Image (cartoon, rainbow, N blue to C red; front, side, top):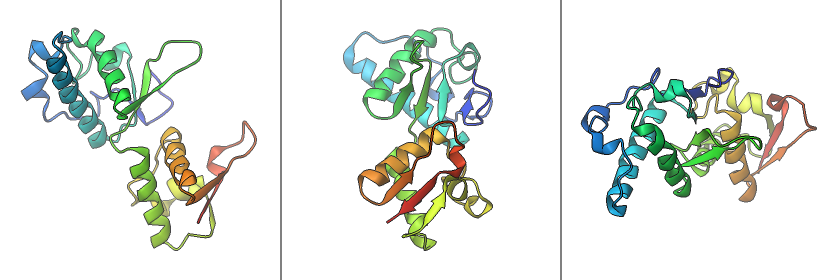
Length: 193
């Protein structure tokens, strides 16, 4: 389990799964279904449960560790093998992204309960409202300063804000001034156009 980031969670400790009792307790939902249409519906239900739980608890990363798999909504041992396949389907649908270490198999993923383009739109709307277009702000000012504490993107983790800023860069609305490797990412500048 990654304990360094407050954005990586065990899902079960912080999330309250309102829909879990109506869906997740049936054994048929825990084992990968062999019929394609049933499998797609199973993935849809699990995706909804995972993303809703993550959004409620502001969880951005999920690590498939034994601790996570022992907690709700994954506390049935049968789901362990199915969960990776479900996240593979979520990745294919653009609802998750595996974070792969070059030396090991993927066990950690980003959850897109709000997609990077949606974060980008929220960030840019805030920049326009606060009159910061045409100026340069630091990552810290935008995502971690007290002035940003009321924003939905407050304390957005680096993996997610980099994707959102990337969307803004591609659309010509922002430019990230990257610095040399090893420097503090909080000091990076972002210019908005």
